[in-house]
Image (cartoon, rainbow, N blue to C red):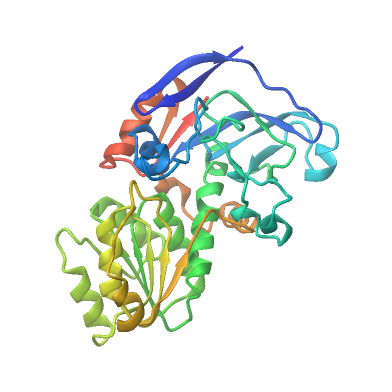
Length: 354
């Protein structure tokens, strides 16, 4: 047996003993070196309706389940065929994409596995437990990657959120002359800053209510940073674009006000990327999207085909991980880790290290 954090329901996370996983055919077992605490983990913990469901819809979560989807670890067991499939050996550092697709539905057959109709998700559905435990298993249909030996485990735990950030930037379809606004400078938003900087837009603007996070955004490549709590962010963006508005707006705050702000801030025929997982449904004026501005509205889900890029960026130091990771705590202090992320005042990325 081994210890684990087990999610039973909102505000009901327990320190329990669970069986140590072993590798079946095609499976990989790792010793978890580090696992992040995501804003979605906090929404799950605090009982957000979109996670647990309500009278109108089923939630994302199927408990009891071990949380944690931003993990990296050392390979300790390989099932039959896993070494050949993934190019792994015992002792390698490995990660797995957050989604575990079925491989057989319409989306999987088209290569659109990240939208799998019958998928599992590490840390939210009990079929695949997450990384808030010392040892975890990757199922046979997981998407697994080897991480270079010289990438420390705590940096490797950033690969999953960075891959999601890269996908959101790709969905923005930004051009060299664009004014790009990224709303939110948490872990995901900062990853978007680093990725968008490589696209070399004319101006990269970052919005956040936390000045400390804005400082980090500038070190990662933001040209302009604005705090909507003290700055008139909308007017500032209009002023820098001759009143037209930004070309691309990426929403990464998880707050409904940022959606409304973006619709006002973006120019006609601009591209709006919605990334966040909200606590509950958000209502906006769809007339702005259609008749008023004819916007391109792009969703962004997970980090499909972006893991190799994220691994390369981290390995080459193209994102300053030291500025993003603010706290590294032992697994037993998971409750403190959740509260650090929940308050957000002093933390950006919080890691648990079993």
